[in-house]
Image (cartoon, rainbow, N blue to C red; front, side):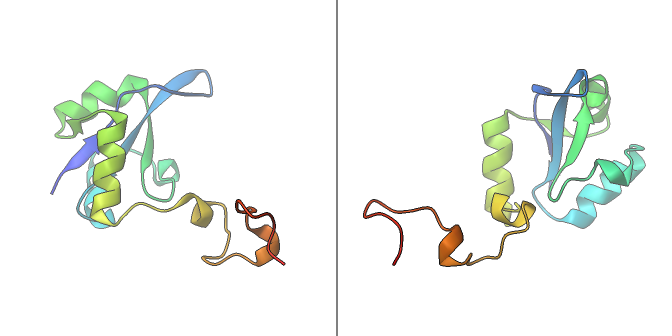
Length: 108
């Protein structure tokens, strides 16, 4: 049961951002974020977006600092990762017209 935070390297809105995740449950993640004073609106499907200015504070409060690849690997292994297609609102099995053509060309 671990809260993880990656390096603040993701640029947006005139700063850089970290991702805060749990490898156990969303309940654990929301409890940690709430205790740290992170607004619920900072939650983005499977992680909290955290400005660089808060990174060290969250580590001091118990988050484990890891690299981005390690964070993604552990989030995936936990089963809590939300795939990009779901974040974009696509169905799990998109219609053939929305699928990428394979090596043989588009589906017929």
